[in-house]
Image 1 (cartoon, rainbow, N blue to C red):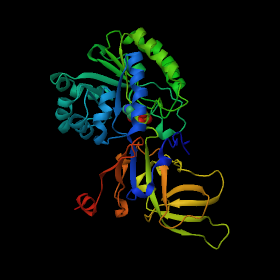
Image 2: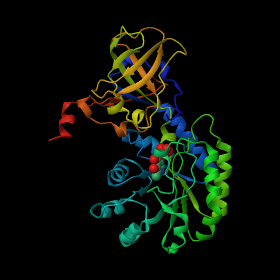
Image 3: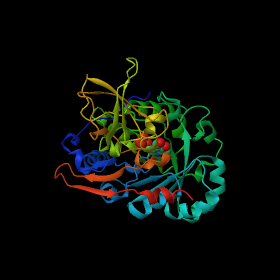
Length: 390
Ligand SMILES: Cc1ncc(COP(=O)(O)O)c(C=O)c1O
């Protein structure tokens, strides 16, 4: 099980959950802005560029706010690049494990950086990229990772993501403008430094003409215990030593602890068998609304959960037996209609929901924790479900 790193309630215990439709994702604009200020300060002190990874958070209603602080967006393909082009300001950097021929012209036209996953893909698309004035990068596999869960470790010897460093030597590196690697996941500073130390002696002699190095995402920079000063020193050092523009492309760190998912208790039952747990069914579905809970897996933190109390399994309304959010402590037996809120639910949630079982999707709301202003910016209906099918 992945350890839950987020879960700081920030100001969410001041929000009246009854003001919201249920279920509902709520983003606190102020918490987001505080994260953006940390990232902006980092940019100012180190001259690096920061792109938001849209794969984690694509809520385009907040694009203007995000664009005031960051340098652009990191995209995973055509749709994210189009979203970035339509709503976000600044640079567009698009990386995909493999681009498709019939999409590439459109991607190339709106992207500034194109990052390829293999030499084969560079050879296929290089001329088109240059026609549209893209700077061309290659993703390398540093073959070093401190990520313990295999699913999230992209730097294994048989990973499909990135070119092995020793294979870079065999390529005409002068064709390439930038180097990219992404091998962190929710990590503090040390694993980044360790990765760079593993790479730098082999990499730096090869990249004398390279313009930029993109250090990917997975940096948990906005977490309270993040070693920000060490990161600043490191980034200045790497940029001096390599003479390259340094980029990072965090997703989680941009919106860490700035969103919750509000739900409602639909039913509660206490089986007569003393070995069976107490169960509450909610209108939050782990599988449809927050699939990382099952995929990672991890147990999201619950707003105002006491250290001790009645142990209750919270489950979703779908027919999947494993649609379980987790086991939680409650001061009192939950009442039907009672509201609950799962913490740190802005990233890898709204971008990953599905209509499995026809379960209603959570609405999306923006809240200002300073003024208490609340705006429901999106609601979903039967029509949205129907439109997904035919
Ligand atoms: C290539 C790349 N860049 C950036 C990110 C963003 O990572 P995070 O949201 O952990 O910061 C990811 C996440 O998987 C990624 O694959």
